[in-house]
Image (cartoon, rainbow over all chains, first blue to last red; front, side, top):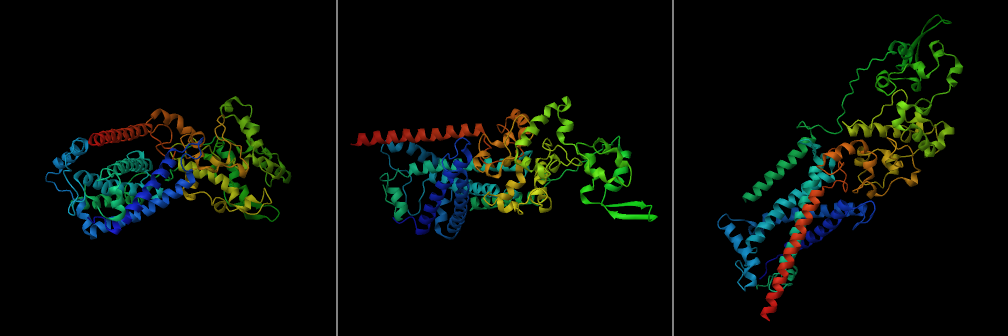
Length: 203
Length: 333
């Protein structure tokens, strides 16, 4: 079934590439040492590419949110109160137990339900909580002159930095898990191909 | 839609919070706020000094020209003006003018040959004195002699070019406002390096443009406001309070990693005086500091360890999951 329109695929690939650049350059900036002038990428290059990728990511994020507001894609991210926690439990149980016992997927992909409850929760937390915080804290670090100087006796820049690297870390973890769970389709590569072709192949 | 509303309100709050603080709506103290120096020092030589400062304390002076038989008003040469407030805040505030200058200056008009008097250098008073032993003035002198500035000594370079004896005060130990210290110290360098009137007194080189010379430096404005020139342009020496060996321009620090790293050189220079105290506090593991933020140098060992544990845990769980999947597939075949 056709599930991923062109704009979603375009946003997704841009987002993925920019995120990879941001992770590599971010780690390079955070952990570069004097003795090891080029930890992964040299500091000066890392700064330039980090800034460039961040600006592209912000633009792509704005387009993503706008697209979700203007198209039906936004409905996939809505979390209903009813049975959500028990549905989440079912999905977790399936991943940790059921799939090895040959049980059927509790929430198979349909045109009405692109994401299972676990996907929905992690995508909402990532895209609507972590990414905005990452962007805001990143802007604060890019323009230190606009950032709160002190907050309850602690440097505002350090707090902004901690928020930024914490969000960056959780989103990196999300990316690792996301890539792994994308191998859980009908075939290990089918969900990746789905994001390229736009068509989802059911299990 | 509730989640959208929540996020939009949160975003607005954070943005407003940031900009409101910037605009001074909140009462958070900004680092670059200048704290007034409320000196209450009263010099024992105040009255004696006033005999000099009566003329040298401001731009205009008056004297009685006995030949003309009338009061004459004249402008004091800017290099001969000593600002009273600056002087009585300076390291030499307790001095009498005639401690350093000839006592014959009390006569007016001053004798012409007095202008040729030998001026003291720092080491003349501070060298070999037990009272100043902790500052290692002899080592400072040695560093200066190896410094690129020393080459200009024949052209008139002395300690006083940087440390104006009438106004200089030790500043780096002013922990209350590091930005003020940075600004004060950089002004010393810029007094010649961005003022051609002073620069040309010591060299025949063409006027230099500091901004253009540092074009390569990313986020130049932030660097200029947050570090001193000497951080990159001197060779660090842990034995003396402030390094005095100014390196030739080709040897200045240009690698970002020198500062933006765990063992940042800033810990041995700019943050030297704060580091010892702050290391004990521990929360941010080390010195880089509640006050200051340097990308790559601000690291929290607890967060690093915590994130490493989470990362290994996630990779471990994925690994176990893969093993179960493989064993399930093997059973199916």
